[in-house]
Image 1 (cartoon, protein in one colour):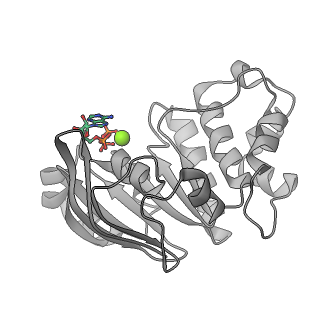
Image 2 (image 1 turned 30 degrees about the vertical axis):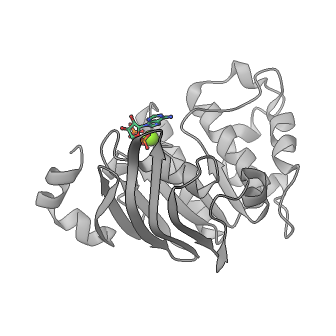
Amino acid sequence: MLDISKLVVAYGQAVILQGVDFTVRRGEVLALLGRNGAGKSTTLKSIMGLVRPVSGQVRFSGKDITGAEPYKIARQGIGYVPEERRIFAELTVMENLEIGRQGARDGRAWTEAELFEIFPNLGRMRARRGGAMSGGEQQMLTIARTLMGNPSLVLLDEPSEGLSPLIVEQMAEAIQLFKKRGITVLLAEQNLHFTEYLADDAVIMEKGRIVWSGGMKNLMADTGLQERYLAV
Ligand SMILES: Nc1ncnc2c1ncn2[C@@H]1O[C@H](COP(=O)(O)OP(=O)(O)OP(=O)(O)O)[C@@H](O)[C@H]1O
Ligand SMILES: [Mg+2]
């Protein structure tokens, strides 16, 4: 569904991605793993058109989207949840969600009931202002709003970061449920254990290169590999 090939990205003179190759298959959750500064966020930003690659290619459903404008990429069906939460503090939960519906891709729209089945705590706070929610709740709202755009592929940048164990658990359940609905997920994470039961496959990045790729089960069985490349 998503094919990244020979992707090179630089910030000024500094070459950050040095020829990245990987594929996300339709319907799977792929974990993009690696330590601080490995290049995970840069990879997601390049897919989304927020950073223009020096060379290489991003293909989505067979179409070349390399360096296209972010809103055009979103309209093709890619949703992006950045590391920093972006809710509208003055707007309510429902109003925040409505904004996510604007510019949505064609296809079956999410109903309120479906969305609140995935995020039950949001259903209990419909009229709450975004600014009056906890960090974890805001993170859920950001993801829920992205789903309102009806994406077929969602890029999540460290969704478990800074969340308490209970909220991390809820986040994992939410991701499992939208995978069930057929949404493909590219999950950038430092936290291997968050991805353990979510991801089908994994790629490991170090210094802007993919150094390993394979099944999640194989990665979990290989502690040497984990110690070498991941913060475990
Ligand atoms: N706007 C920028 N200008 C210059 N260098 C940058 C910029 N953004 C990121 N970098 C550098 O690019 C490298 C990769 O950063 P990136 O944010 O992609 O890593 P990451 O894997 O997402 O790390 P983390 O797990 O800490 O979020 C780092 O060395 C970082 O310092
Ligand atoms: Mg990052």
